Length: 120
Image 1: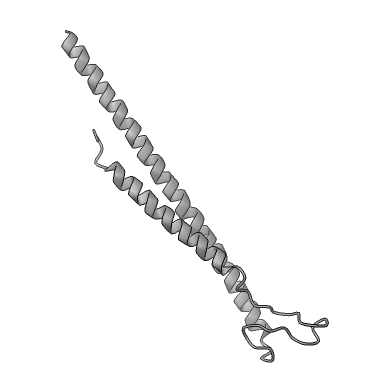
Image 2: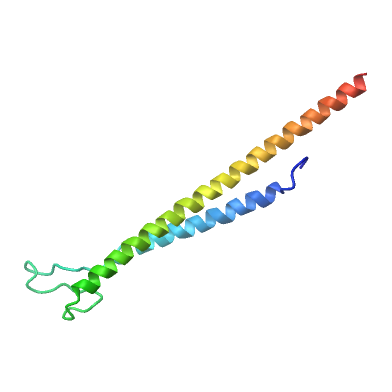
């Protein structure tokens, strides 16, 4: 590649690896859904408590609420990781495209200049 010290295939490979990481983050984000813990509710208007990860009779609604809050924050961070990783992958692919176009333009310029010299 004329004038660049970057291998276009390296850029494309990096973009592909980042896209794979973005896909994994998206899968993780999807996997986190449904892992919430019921804080309240139950049968017959709460007369009988609902089952949750903290036990039917443990009476830990504050712990369950803290878990749900933490889970929501983790879901948000994983979703953000997915988005930024996918964006970075797309950006690297675009950089590779721009480098490739610049390289082609440079080669055409050199060829035109060489043709001009031969014509003299």
